[in-house]
Length: 213
Image (cartoon, rainbow, N blue to C red; front, side, top):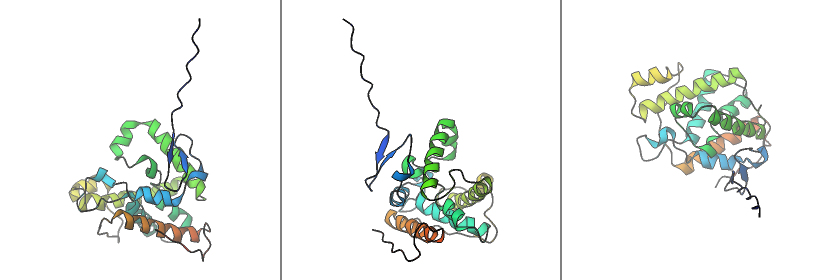
């Protein structure tokens, strides 16, 4: 007697967020993405895999706020839409975590494809093009490297020479003293910055009340 074919075990490919949303990790929908979940997650993801000095880790949420500020310093008058893109440039890490660049390169195209799908869904959710225009992408990358320079020299044990070699010099006229924030405060700062930019691009009414817990 022939055996019945075994049913395929369905692999769970979603994550439940604190908002109650279930985000499909393989096919993320913009409708399942909430800024509160992003802020909560990023505030608890450590840059440099946590290998930094101080009582608190330097979170991706705090890093993102700085990168948006640097991008606007490099390009005065930057459209709020692209400042929002800068704030959200690492938003996918609320799901996949922060991996150092050498490890991302080692993982290859599979990781990059996954990251790109999630980033596209986040962008659509917040009124941005699924793919960031190359000029803006280059600007954000420059701001990202500038922030990494300050992080490396002040928090991660790099010498100034090493940091210059890896990340280049920060933009003229910009300086930064980093004080890593507790997760709750980093989360609040990220949400506050989102509120300002979301109002500027019309995602929130100008008089919209905003509450963080």
